[in-house]
Image (cartoon, rainbow, N blue to C red; front, side, top):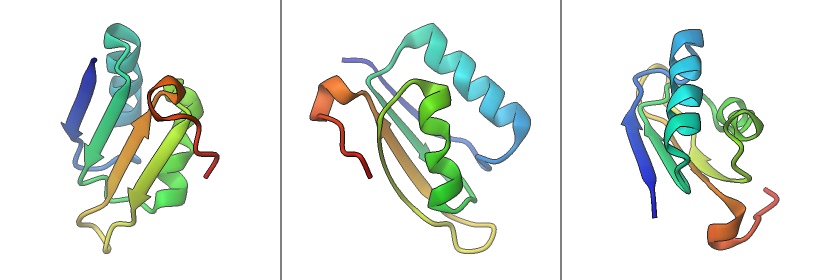
Length: 82
């Protein structure tokens, strides 16, 4: 199993999203965990299709600190459809 965990310090930054997508394409992880996203869950959930992952769970940031996002491939746990 291949997993990717990253303290991204801001998941809304264009460069961060570009680098994240490149990492996912290069390593094809089944699970991607992001911390310190500094974003609301709704915004992070939009990354699912760009990453090619279907499952998502997350927690909102509190202002400009915190925020978690967990993405997973549907073959791992099944599609959650959240």
